[in-house]
Length: 333
Image: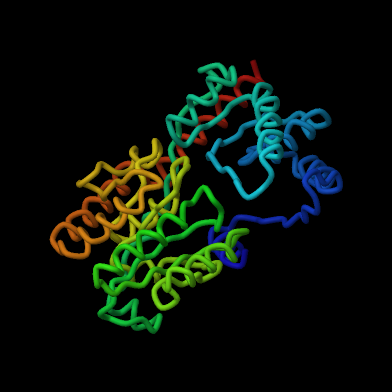
């Protein structure tokens, strides 16, 4: 949150914190409604199941245009019936929204299955600020700042500690690589409900000196620059920002071959793709990159160029601005 506030201040963007105390906190909804009314807000842009529903509730009292972005976030650590309930709420809400944005083709297909008409939905993929995410340190300089060994093979993974991120599969892959005699260290940044389970797995596989659960990293740029490779082991994703960030930082990427990821990475050109839930393939890819310095460098250069050309934040926001213009124009007509 501190990093978000800091970046908002630099950008001249106001953030108004509102405490959300429960799954449906009507006090928070009322606060948001008052804020929208006071500021004469014209567009509500939601980003998850809860804010999809909140926007619909608030628009019953205030004449808002409703826009949402579907990111493909799924929290498998909550009860399956809650997942189904949240998705049902989004399905109900989005049919009443003015426009829906999907960050990957599979999510656009989901909108169509929900009955969202093509003229009220479109694909706008995630993007990042390539000025903010660019390499400014060498690998050795970054490791020196973090107190890391210069000789170890360093892997980095980032995300919620939840089942869909596949960190259990990644830890198993590290065990395979370790048995081959390669000394490596995996740093996992993130928090979540699987901390104890993953920690137990690390101890069971005798990897306490190889795998480290770092907790939440407020700014991952330094550790990405220190890494030999970034690994995404997810079972489900939309179009993951963490992969864009690693690519922009010129950190070689290994990722599971998911629909959104394959939009970013052509296997062997911008990174290496492996099957989800396949620790052996992950281990093979780790070994391949660790032994082929030229390939790792080529992937890193190509990845940076891919982000610059196709996933730059300014270009994405121009597309979002066009969506806003469209929904406001619908109101005037």
